[in-house]
Amino acid sequence: MQADSLLSVVAQVAGEHRADDVFQGIVRGLASQSGVAVARIWLLSPGELGDQNSPQDGSPEQSESFHLVASSGRSRDGSENWSSIDGSSSRVPKAYAKVDPIGKTGDSVLIRDLNQNKEWIDPQDWIEREGLRSFIGNPLVCQGKIIGVLDIFSREELTDQDSLWVRIFSDQAAVAITNALAFEALQRARAIEEQHTQQLRQVIDLAPLHMFIWEADGSASYGNKRSAEYFGKIPQMLPMEFLDLVAHQTMRRSSSTESRTHW
Image (cartoon, rainbow, N blue to C red; front, side):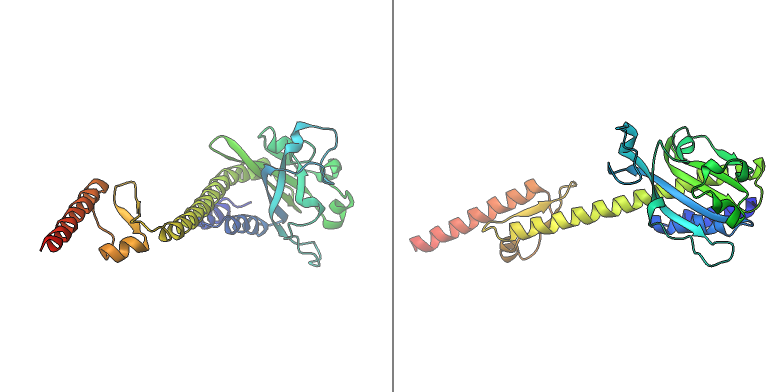
C-alpha cells in the first residue's frame, strides 16, 4: 500500500456530492493498489427479517445488517468482474458474518495468511483459485458512529504498516461518505419541500380569496391567482403592513362607492 496513492484517492472523492460516486471512487482506488484482488464497502442499515442470509434464531441483531454498496476487483485470470453488488453476498447479517468483529466492535482486522484462516472465506477454495494471501477490514467511523465496513483481499502479504495506512484511509473515507449521504438527504428534503409547496400553491389558487405564502422573514413569496388579479404582483411588505394596505384600499373603495351612490 502506498500512502501517497491512498491520500490521492481520498482527495478525489472528498469533493463528490453523490454517494455512489464516493463509493465507486473508494473501491476503484483501492482495487488499483498493487496486489489488491477486491475492495468492498458495506453500509449498516435496517434489514428485513427472514431473508435467506439472516439468522433465524430470533436474535435482535437481525434488525440491522451490512449491505454491500460498492465492490471493485477482478479474478486472477481476468474472466470475472467483481463489481456487482447483487446476489447472495450482497447482504450479511450484522452478528453472523466475517464483518461482525469489525462492524460490531470497531476493531480493525488484519489476516496476514488466509490459508491459516479459511473459515473467513466462503467458498473456501476461492483462496487457492484466486491466489489470495491477506485480508484487511476496517470500520468506517464518523463522529464516533460506525456506519459501515471497508474490506480488502490481497494477493500479496499485507503488513501492520499496510493496516495502519488503510485505517487512516478508512477514517477519511467515512467522512466523505457521511458528507455525501448528508448532501443527498438534504437534496431529497428540498425536493419534498418543493413538492409540498407546489401542492399548496395549487390549493390556494382555487380559493376565491386573496391568499399569500409568507416566508420566515415576513416577506410574501407567492400570491394566489385572485390576489394577482387584484394587486398585479406580490406586495413586498410585512404581513401587518399588507393588512394595513388592504384595510386602507377597502375603505377607499367603500367611500368611492358611497359617493357615487349619493350623487
